[in-house]
Image (cartoon, rainbow, N blue to C red):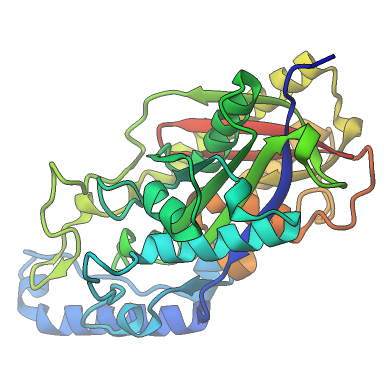
Length: 378
């Protein structure tokens, strides 16, 4: 007797760039830029025509975010006080793009951990914030590089892209359109970050993750049942990036400085005040529907944007101050990696969980957008 397909998470994968920037290195570079700017524009600053820039500090970064370092695809370009952006060489059209390349690394890692061959996969979703181009889709390029006979497409819901991708993959499996789906999250956030902005120059890092979502009938032992998912969006301008093929601009650094609206911008205090209760309520409401209470939750893998946000959200969900074991962070070593953050936290902090343990993968970000994926270890 046949039964309805049941989507599960079979495995996750991770690609980490080799280069790393510490807070100390980042602050030294930023402060060198500030000194150059203030010196070269001394007359205008004295005349009140231009604002004097303020230095950053390690203490400011750690207090504001909890971030200690970040991995990047190009360290030298970012730390050059006269450039302050990654130098990523354009590749010929017959070469694999950098986003597809790092996505393939993460996807292969997930497939290997599941004991799965790429030929068994039916679909690829490239779910990320920082897309390299409008088309052809990075997902189709990743599909081609892996040798998958199926379909693929890109999707962007900012920092929530991975959880939105997981629910989309799960829906395909429930509908019988696929039995094995790769959700890939290549995030080269360094290309969209304004490294000259004191309030945000420390936030992002680069990485790629992958999630293999499959029908339970073919999943390996020790997989994760998906108990339920919930997606929610609400329009807000408090996190925005205007760069795109209709708003090209330069999108980077020129002699007049960064075109800041074509890079990452946010109203950090407004985001904090509005997103924390919004996300906490979403999680608690979904727990009620699933019959879960705070004491049932073994671990929370929350979006890695800010330690203070995660502390307050976890406290609301669990009913007490969360320990590092209950709500692990990777911010100290990876920084904010947009959609990949909660997946990194899960990937690096789940091996110790026992059969029957329940957890939550949750992401939230621009849109506003938020996604929850409740899982249980088999």
